[in-house]
Amino acid sequence: MKVGLLACAFGRHSVDVANKRKAGGMHVGKCVCCKTPMEEIEPNVWDVLQVKDAGLGRRYFG
Image (cartoon, rainbow, N blue to C red; front, side):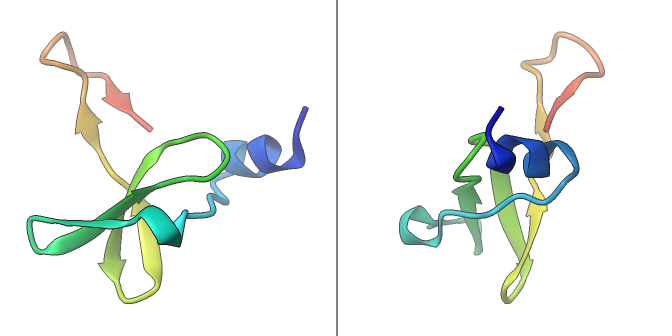
């Protein structure tokens, strides 16, 4: 098991800042290890983006 994936399991994601994009006035990007979508809530503060699961239930990705 990669150490990066273990860190992601505990919520310590690392954002790929080279591929971040601007969407809806905020920056969004993905975690380098697990590809979880993340958003920048404050400058240099990232949080997991809550993406609904296509309306199939109350599940969320991330």
